Length: 334
Ligand code: SF4
Image: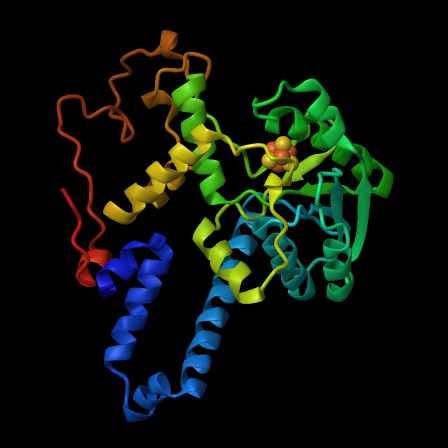
C-alpha cells in the first residue's frame, strides 16, 4: 500500500498527523533510520504513535467537556460500560482527565449484565477492579424479555436498548449519579444525523449533552469530537477485553451500517468532508434554512440597512478546498 493509500484509509486528523509524521520522517537522521529497522526501534515508534494518540484523545475529550459544560465540580459521573471499544476508551480517557482536571468529580463505572447467552460475566469486573475504579454490575435478564416479545428473525435492538435505558436511569438514581456518560463518538453522531434525515425527514442527531427522557438526569457524550478510527486504534493499543454486543444473535441496524460505509467512503475519497459535515452541525444558520419555528420568516422586512449575514442573492457561492492536504500531495477530487 502506498503512503497515499495508507493516509486515505484514516480520518482527516490522522491523515494530517500522519502526513506531518511523514514529512518529519524524510528529515530523519541516520540514528532515526536505524530506529526503523531494529525491533527496539519499531517498538519506540509504536510507543510514540500511542503517546500522540493518547494526547489527541485527551485533547478532544477535554475540549468537548469544556465546550458543552459536561462536568462540574462535585459531579458523580456514571460511565456506562458495555464491554465494547467505545465505552472502554471513554472510561480510560475520562480517568486520565480526572487525575489532571482542575475540578473534582467522581467516576463510577456501571455495566448492565443483560443475561445474554455466553456473556462472560467475569470479564468486566476483573478489568474494572484492575483499573482501581469504583464500579457496579447490574444483573437484569432483559434478554428473556426481548426474546419473548420480539418475533424470531426481527431486530431486537430497539426494545433491548429501551429496557437498558430505563434500568440505567434507575441505577443512576440509586448510586446518586449526577451525570450519565455514554460512549457515542463523532461518527455515531454523524450516522444518526443522516439516518434522521434519510428516514425521519429531520435535521437532528445525538446531542453531546441532554436531559434524560425521565427529566431527572443529564446525559453526556464526552467522545463527541472523537473519530471512531481513533477509538479502534486506542482499543487495539490498550488490548481492552472486548465483549461483542451480538451475543444475543441480533443483527446490528442495517441502515446504520450502510450510512457508516457511505461516510467512510466519502472520508477516503474526499478528505475533510466528514469533519466538515460534523462542524456544520455546530454552525447552523436558521435564517438560511426553512424551519418556520426556528426563524420568524413572517416578519422579514427590508430595513434599508446592509446586513453582513444577509443573502448574497445572485452570487455563486465559493467553497474553499482545504489547502493543507494539498500540501501533502493528497489529490482532492473536484
Ligand atoms: S445487539 Fe443484542 S444486546 Fe446489543 S442492542 Fe441489539 S439486542 Fe441488545
